[in-house]
Image (cartoon, rainbow, N blue to C red; front, side, top):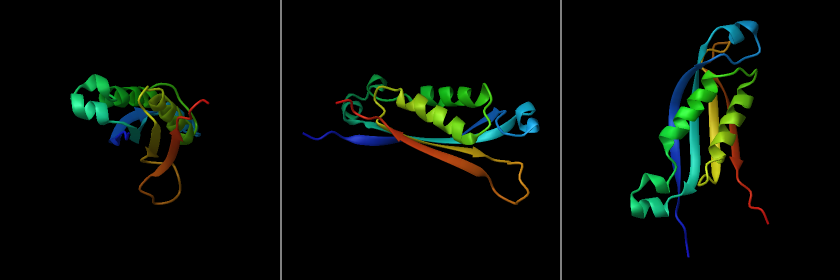
Length: 126
């Protein structure tokens, strides 16, 4: 018997946060952008057409936005890790990849952004 898995993507979620190493970054909000990719079984939802049989991406997006907007961490890697762990707490999520971008990093180079990417998967107990 086979089971269909699918990928749910949230791209370009923007939220204001105070994350960074420098004092200015901790005291003045800046824009962060988040991409989330979730791998989960989709066969039941594909047949039932019911939101209760899949991952509600609006809930994930709201939770990720709240993680960016509340608290403060120094590293975008830490923020990406926290968002990824939140995603994997969803019962149906099997794997997740999260990218966090700092759109205006305080560095002496002309860059579009800096980003950190974290990928995690659930392990089966056994």
